[in-house]
Image 1 (cartoon, rainbow over the protein chains, first blue to last red):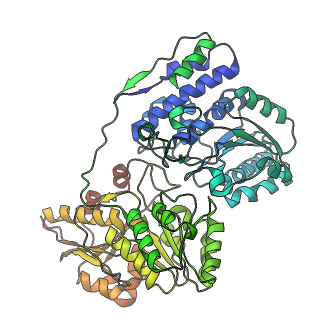
Image 2 (image 1 turned 90 degrees about the horizontal axis):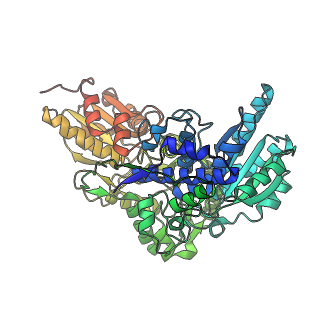
Length: 282
Length: 350
């Protein structure tokens, strides 16, 4: 079987096309998806569904939102191939690393500050994201720095107690520098989130904790962009519920396909019989 | 997806995307000689025990496929409790179930189960009840996910829980025997540590009728050196190392020691029969099997304790393919053979 990827030069061409910013970022996200598929197929394991559901968001943040001094990290961590695809496309990581996912001295399966420059913090054990974001902001404030922190979380991940512990103190301190984007793809490791332990009305809950809350379509970058802009001047921490689809609109990866926990695109393709709604974890 | 991307590029007035062809890497496929699927054996045995023991219930934290519970859930849906990704909540719930007369078996990956609800596990143990904790995905491999998922400190994290037995089987036989012991004979809480990767051990594992506390199975004799190891990765490493050493005339024995804390030191010393003892840990050297064996020997056979060498994980686990990770940590069979040459008391025969 021949594997195919998009070169750095071709990614540069797409990233710098003139025209509509949202269309360009969506094209960049799809190009990154193709490279994620390449990386995961090459090594034979990796969480494709959760990576694909978040890639429009991750691409938009990196192309249009993040400024010098800002931080972005994923609390769920297992969407690392998406971050790697974006960072290699931007030249912030050596492009040749796309051939080294989950290989020794390559790109680890979950983000690791010790292994990868540009990774902000090591994640992979769920629920730690907002607590870490708070630490970054408090340290920045003490040092007189003004950077913002963008944290992506899963939705299955919100079942962890630490997520709920972290909400109130972040609001109490008015840490408006923090924006949490929940990748609400509705699927976790075993099955649909609401079949495992429904998280209920997250919007009302987060608002009750004192957060500025909004929701948007996580695959419609116009919707995401206007939602982020609408929250920009809020003096509270912000939480955006981004409605997404596991697989990010790629038919063979949508949740109706049978997708076992952490496996390859090859087996995804083999097993699209819709006999169960399992998907890689979120 | 490529079509969708090209449609976007067309709308941006651009040419379609060009892709680069790449040859897939050659995956070295190890010969599946006597591959041991421990999680499957564990789950199957749990169902068998549940047929006889109506108090047995299973709790899981969104990993039922990975912890071997598909069959249990199908057979006993009313005795299966899906707790979501909320390990602390799951473990305290199990503790109360035990107080109320049930025998809960609690499941997740070792890296999460032994650590995040560690305080809840301790609290349960202080109540004097019996809860079975089964952690899968233990140890260095699979190496792909990286160190957040490579559980190499679970033995030490649970090592001081009062009354807890810690067990790591190396074979499907030992896995079944571990479940049997935990359900029917264990007086208190039990932690069962399971390697998830189907692992080819390279020889036919012997049948195990019943686990004997503190003692293991002599898999191979040898007068010059005794490897003491738990789990399929280290036992197969010991076996391979013994093969390599035998080529230069060094006779190394191999013991599978499933008891990770309460080891019968007299028994180990008797098996070693004066030869140096090398423990192998798929865990940080600190607080692992090696420390347990050393403590047991120090108490029961101080002379043998003086001849003990500990080998295990010494740095944060590396991410990579299984064999390259083991080699990088010098815990593959060939590296182990190399490391024991020249240890005090190991003869350097050619």
